[in-house]
Image (cartoon, rainbow, N blue to C red; front, top):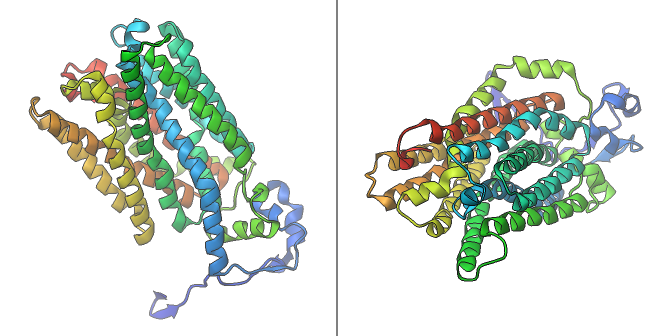
Length: 459
């Protein structure tokens, strides 16, 4: 019950109210369909169904939501976990012989880690336009398969120049993943459902950190006892790269571009799935570039607020993502121990992202609730910097706490998908947000080479 100026107003229950699709006002649906060249993809769902009335009750809505979760979320979660794992393989490799085998000198490693974000930065806006223009699932699967192949090719690298090329193109192909998954989420889920779902698939960064650490430790441990014909760090790239290719092929055949070509839905359920997100007032995708929406995005102060936060918040992330193994070694642990001791940080990330996502959707305060993860991350940074160098356990705990700092970034990403209407404007804001993410990560990776502090104080 909502109240305005003392008058009680009962909002309509859009999930129980029958939907008359015979027309809008005095204009029949047929006249709208004639102009579909510039219309949202949702219009196609109602072609040939003029005069019908759709009824979406609570039971049907819950059944559709369960089906969507079952068919979409596992793939989104696994792919996003691989996305993070593939970025962090360089950190594992850095203490498994990569530096020596590639003869990295001075700040070569810092530049090698940064090249990923230069590729990401260069291709972020073009890939967002392609995500809008091309079939969403098909283009996303192409990028997933290509980044897996590129990552596997790292095992054949013999010098610094080859490694730079691999890292750049890895960034190019991974640039589509985060915005693409945000579009999938906004396409299939209502605004009240999106925060939790975004937190869930993003939380698989934490699962990937656990899996990656255990995988790298297992390879390093076994090859130390039973030497392999190729270097251990090359095995890590081969395994993670080929695993990504395999899942990317599954993604190609299973993931629908939108509700209209979901093979696991009946024709009636496809229209009902479109209907259930009508409340978002954003449609399910528009392939046409609209210049006025581009200008709206560029002139909107909130766009630049998103960009500013992404830039500032991801400066520490730039150091942690590619230097966390070396950071843990600096706490007094062996390289092999660091591979395992980094994994509990993934648990912190999982708990904070899912918890903040659920609470944010439940209480409608995503930004406020997600700030708790940022406070935990700041506490972690203070422990690393302020504790005595002899307190290895305390500084390691500080590193674990820093993994909670991603929650506001994810909350803002979900707000872009829920609150920005107009597909051209949405893709532009998302692209600029991730450009800020790239610049912040590049700046963060420059700190270890520009600072003269001991490694424990450099992130």
